[in-house]
Length: 327
Image 1 (cartoon, rainbow, N blue to C red):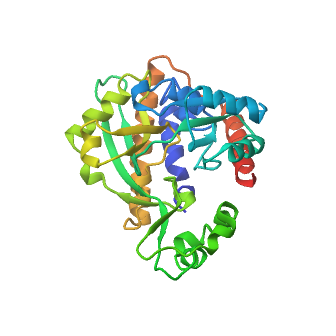
Image 2: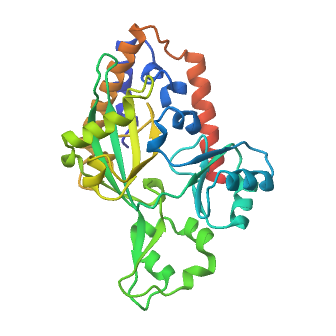
């Protein structure tokens, strides 16, 4: 509903750039501009190391014992996060608590994946950033707070009953059954918040709240301090775990858990208070900025993606998404 009606808008921007796949030059240092099929590990290498979690790359088809030894040698302890190196929408992202769970994940993983130390902060925010090639400082165009999928106990209802009583969590019931098994029969204490999915993805049940009104000079300065040193990064969204928003704005107690490039959504559009027409306008606004950045980088000598390579990218991305959904 959001994107298909905007196809004529994409054609308009493609005409301006003289390329259907103009996004490739939005972030020249990222594969496909960060639209799809880009390696998360390669993007982590672009980010100043003090801003990211400790991360280990695990090639596919390695034995569980080899992978476990590499993780433990890196001084990452349980629990930790495992996620596909090329992924989307939090598919395949899991919190691993012990060696058996990790062995199962290694056996399951259809591709290269990453292991990251667990960040202690429980709040997550998505910050959209844009910087033209000729600008020293970029700007923040939207901020979204991500409320993890959770339920609150009443002292008598089981976890299963609490999940079914909430439309947002009920939609995730199939996945939650696989995750918790017999644990769904547990009674949650009165007033206790139980986090079902600790990931800030709307496809995994998180609620997105637009907090763009909190953008400040301090926050812009902090984000420029992260993105400025990144070679040829001009357009995308930073997903950040943090302690308090005030500390984040001041550049304290936070960690960048992911940066998405041209394929990043301005996820503040998913706030339930916004209308579909508002979302269309916001998507169009961001596409316009990406188009401008891409054209400027193209004028500096960066090549657009060819039609053949663009089609191949979309096909590979569709196959990967289907694979991650099934597994």
